[in-house]
Amino acid sequence: MKRIIKRSLKWLIIVALVAGAGYILYTKVFKSDEAAVPEMEPLPPITFPVTEETISTSIQVKGKSQYQEETLVYAPFASKVTSWKAENGVQVKKGDVLFTLDQSTLRNEIATVEATARKAQLESELNDFIAMQDEEAAPAGATEAERLKALAAQETAKLSEELNQVNADIQARELADKKAKLQAAVVHAPATGIFLADKSSELPQNVTDNQYIGKIVDLNKLEFIAQVGEQDIFKIKQGMKVQVKMSAIKDLQLVGEVTEVAKFANTASAENSASSVPQFEIVISLQPNEHLIGGLSLTGDIETLRKDKAVVVSSMAVMHEGDAAYVMVDRGDGQIERQDVEVGIETSEKTEIVTGLKAGDTVVLQ
Image 1 (cartoon, helix red, strand yellow):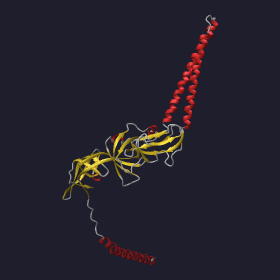
Image 2 (cartoon, rainbow, N blue to C red; image 1 turned 90 degrees about the vertical axis):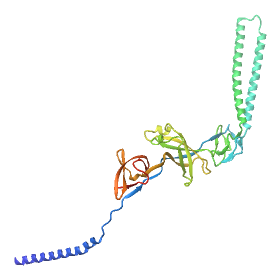
Image 3 (cartoon, rainbow, N blue to C red; image 1 turned 30 degrees about the vertical axis):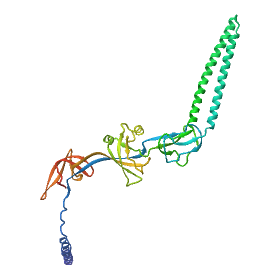
Image 4 (spheres, rainbow, N blue to C red; image 1 turned 120 degrees about the vertical axis):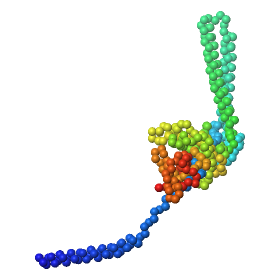
């Protein structure tokens, strides 16, 4: 029993020595390191100056450029092209010859119609002569049956004459139409501008009736067609200025102006209104530029609100409580006070302060 007590006492002494040594080591090593680390000073508050400057809001739109004036060119009738005078992408003047069509087939058709009409006229005159002879040869004392027969012959002649007249009118209109086409066999430019063929790779050598050949455009009159959603359409008005950028040339800055604002959604978006957001078309006129052509992708910033000499502050510093707004103003000497303000134009970066602050004040973000 004594032996067991001695052993327990021995282990208790060993544990106490180890614990004491560990405490001494902790106080000398770890405590001394903690004492060596200096306390961090609090960071200074973030401040924003209140300034007087221009503030504005804008809406970004995307779309494509198109020619404001396009005069379409069509083939007057089906034929072979005998010569091309115009080239794709070349300037033409109103009245210049674009191309000439072969007239031989059309002239043959005109000759055939004229011959048919002349034949019908001669047949009509012959029928009139025969009818007149029959009337003169009729006996004075003809029976009732003979008189009825003669009357029937006269009525038949009248109907035949009316039918011949109808055919003659049809042939006359057909002949006039073909002669009008013949006059249009030499196709002239209907306007002044750049001729753009339907297929830029090659000009057609054979055309069909009323085939689309191309268009003549005015490079000095282009417009920007963009689509906007229902959230923005009521903010955009005619006459608003637009800063336009071209995707093809990043550094090129263009200037435009809103000329048209649609009152109704596009037909396509209206039909799919259940599954898509309605889109409204706006038209922006563009100033001439040597790099500007139709079909380019454009981006525009429409300035919807603008105020010069406005008192503004960083939007980060403006706090909102329901409909109310306030800022924390640095009064100097470490004094920071809450100041209720009335806000005006708001952007993601700056907010206009209508009342409550003046230029030169400093607000604090807390």
